Length: 141
Image (cartoon, rainbow, N blue to C red; front, side, top):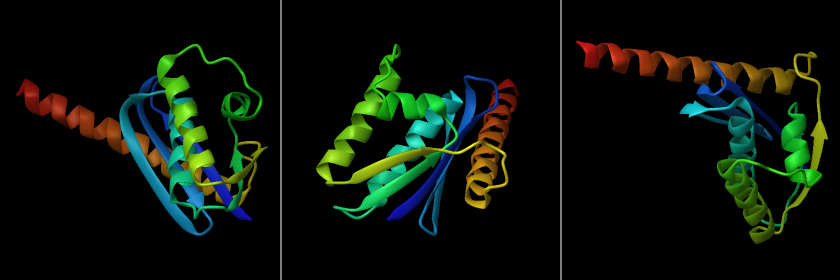
């Protein structure tokens, strides 16, 4: 079983956002100029599933009840970009023959891998916010 921990963070919501995933021992992360924390967390799940080997069993640990609802409980998604990302996650899962289990973990509860992805996602969001501020300052001039 491959253990995956994910998190998303946004500076303002929506705003500069970061995501992170710990896939086994491999940490991956990135950022968006403008997204919500839940979109960033869904994206972390997508990227994590994209790098696991085919026919794997994975357990996704997330502190987002919305992500769990959208992915495991069939909750309605009112936004097209969220719906597209949920469909992309399902496509990767099916194409790779993945057996996925999703587990809610309480955020900021001292679970080391969850704390790690939380810090990295927040750092990615902060760095994106700084890059955007720097670009704005350069354009102003």
